[in-house]
Image (tube, rainbow, N blue to C red; front, side, top):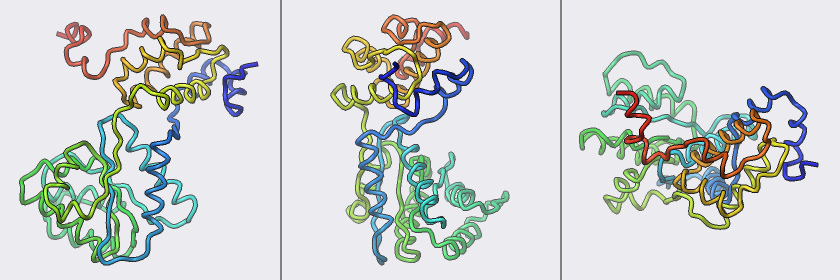
Amino acid sequence: MADHLFDHVRPYLDRSLEDRIAYFRAPRWIGHQGAKQVLERLNELLARPPALRTRGLMLVGPYANGKTMIAERFAVAHLKASGSQRVWVVQTREGAGLAHFYGSILRALRAPTGNSRDVGRKAEQVDHLLDRLQPRILIFDEFHNALRGRSRDVEAVLAFLRRIGRQFDISPILIGEVAVYDFINATDEMASRFELLAAPRWRYDEEFLALLDSLEGALPLARRSDLSEEKLAREIFRLSEGLIGEIVAIVTTAAVAAARSGAERITKTSIDELDYVPVSRRRGARQRDGLL
């Protein structure tokens, strides 16, 4: 009967093993309550009236916790719904300095960047593109990368964020780790421009158990695994350290193993057999010792 699976997932049980494994590993949207709240706030910001002093948002939390996926889903959904691109995602490049920052924006706007280190020229090119494309929202993913340079460069980046609101009516969205929160709140002036949307680590609670139930329904295994059962759920939580990217990786890896073995369900024993090392312990893991 496979009534533990979502209706659209159940037909995959009749597919080949290779097709099922590809489905297990495919990126998937996980619409948990926190993600839905962030999307709702982003849509409200997109629908705001014009303003001379725009407000932005900070989506802050640890790595591997779904922040980028939320931003990309928002941008893609808007493009599909409107047909015109008013939301752009900037992958903030590694490396300090304004040249790297402006290069990130130019790459996101699909403009040639060249090898020039002329910051003034890049700034003019960015302004020209913003005036022509008229984005409503610029999302800066991994924004903490822009905060690792000299203090004068960091201040110039923050001045840019203030200016694009006044000059181009753009709301900036800053995605990153806690350093983003610290820099924005270092002055009252910047703090007044950005609202915090937190993406903290998951806690072991009913929402986490509901997430496991949702994952179980989305992975086409023939037998019920009862991922939210106490012992199994506790072990997944311990190994994931509350990071949604790790939660999905653990469950997906276990599902692939269950399909290949013919067991068709995930158990605590099968989780243990993965020998999965939590992120915080990988630096000193015995696997590393074997590389020396």
